[in-house]
Length: 269
Ligand SMILES: *[C@@H]1O[C@H](CO)[C@@H](O)[C@H](O)[C@H]1NC(C)=O
Image 1 (cartoon, rainbow, N blue to C red):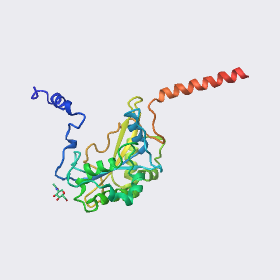
Image 2: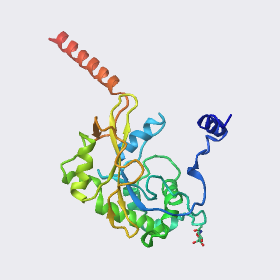
Image 3: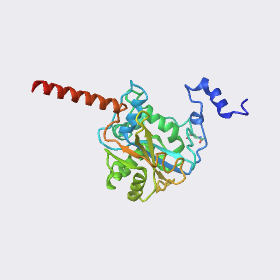
Image 4: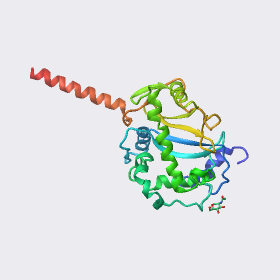
């Protein structure tokens, strides 16, 4: 049977394991062969939306400043994701991060409020940092996170986009966003969107810029999903507050409230 329907079989075989992670992602110890390094920034308001959307009980921890935050530094092969989880013996040590911990909280923020302390950083280290160690500036837990902070200070997308007159609270076509980054940084980046399943609205989620192994900025051409996963024909929101799910309901509530106020006023008069 498996011969004839590989996809179905994979799913069936995976069913008992879905709570873990059936697919290759969690596979330990892979050779760390890669072409370039993605530096992934995320827009915290969109990240918060996605986190809240996944469960009613979720709430967010947002940075104090209205800036992009780090998701991770990801060694990557062209046309693929990964390598990932390259060396399980390179364990994450939170104590080493003490001198930069406050800065990490603000700039490498774990949006998912209430999650296990350090789990986001540990995850990024285990999954990507252990692969990045062949690069001198990324070859320890401390250097991986410190280099991330430096890259964010240099390339924070709030500043890059602002220089091209792209600001939160507006909608843009994907080509405007891609062109804006290219115009300011002189290199082609990758933009990742997320879709509001209830309203269909698209939000800017991540912007990834690329570095070679000497950490020189390079074009992202050739990375998986380059240059974008966003719909090219639709406007994309760069939100200035955490997007709400029930925009239509909210509108209805506003209209009802307005009607009430008007009726009250009419009665009084
Ligand atoms: C994993 O890291 C350890 C400690 O640095 C090293 O001795 C070992 O060779 C590494 N293994 C791989 C597969 O790179």
